[in-house]
Image: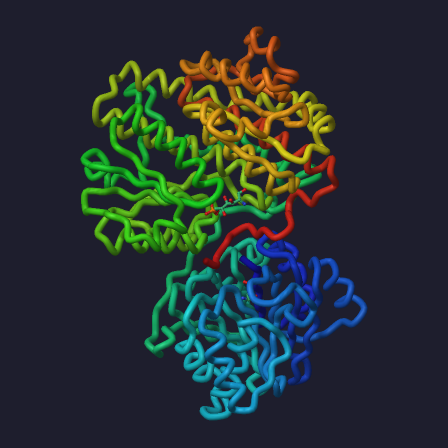
Length: 610
Ligand code: AGP
Ligand code: GLU
């Protein structure tokens, strides 16, 4: 949530900060701002709206300096206005702070500060923090000490960067619950909430951990805990390229990412299939293989699209590995005292690896003695670093706020994990080989779907003004229905519901009339006939059916107004193909409605607050 960037070095930092904010904009985009120390004074410019609005101001009133910070906001406390935009300053305009997260006890601190004579200009929790630090500075007269003492009072989460006009050759950054990376350049350092803001300057990075603070100057930096205990950090290398952060000729990141799937599905499997043995080898899970085989229960926990992937994983693992699986929203898991034992394995799924609810669920699982494993995309992210073991899906940077390629990457990984566990238990080599073959064909099959998207585009045009949509599916494709509906809601703002097809008759069927588009996922599998009956039920009530069906299914044309075809694969793998047209449908509808596909309203790419 929100993008943070800070610079200290020898260059004029304003253009650099603004460019970094453009890269970070996918993390939050309701307002943006910069603060730079210029001639020992703080200069701040901030504006509600997109980074482009800020750019216009910065271009017309340039500020020059070599130490500065910038922020794109995703409002939690206070409306997205100019005043609530970050950076925030203290009353004396000595400090400028950017903050990602929530200061949960901000009201208590605010009342105390008000009693001490401080007045506030914004409604944010973040301003309270900078005013607190400023008050402490009046007592201790040391920038670093004031920041540490201030942070010790904070309940909640923060990633911050702060500068001080009285100590103009310093930048301080700290984290608790929100990500922060330090990029190490030559005579310059950049702090940011993710590496995409850093990669065009340096590949050498250091990740801050919770409770750590970094004090940066032009010549070096020190890291310690907020309790003043020094910590030594390891320098790591960023592995992705700058091209991954560009649109590569596509009008939107989302469309680019949808079209990358033949490669990203392949990348998720690369070097991990053992065709002769009919299994998968997952280096990241090698150390915990025995515990996986012996697990009495597997729990998946995640949010949003990752939660949908987990639901498919439940069906896969129970079917092939005969292990009881539970899937739970991470936000519920953390607060409901879940029953866990040391024989349980908890998998957390997260594209970003930074989702606060998911991270908290992981910590709860580990606290209770369960093995905490991860299926993550972003390398080096908080979740990836806190799990006992895990696997990366290697889908590359996903910039579109709506998750697409990460979903199919997660599904591919879940299929590999299922294969590995099932083969350690009951699955025969022949059956294993059949799954391996199915997996190997997926990149080609997904390419086939993507080579002809005109049909989907036409359907989108026809239904773009619908007020509601219903999505139905069964078995492996029930979570795909949920995912199709979520994506439509997120980017086109059309109300959509996903349902297990047979559950429709227990309620949502009341919604069906001639205005209701019903998207049904009905691939050729052992439950197809049942879904066909559900389609009949919709048709009998005048609903307009858009079917996602297997190539060669002629019967479906009798019932559906529109048919989108996908190639045949084994049932377990159908979601990896059937979701592609649904993501495309949401995309084209959103484009036809003139929506901002990559940055839908109210959303942010990684949700690092509760
Ligand atoms: C997906 O389109 C969403 N924007 C959202 O539901 C997302 O999947 C969820 O916030 C979880 O994110 P994560 O995978 O990064 O943890
Ligand atoms: N809680 C802060 C605010 O509402 C920070 C939000 C963010 O992470 O962007 O301003």
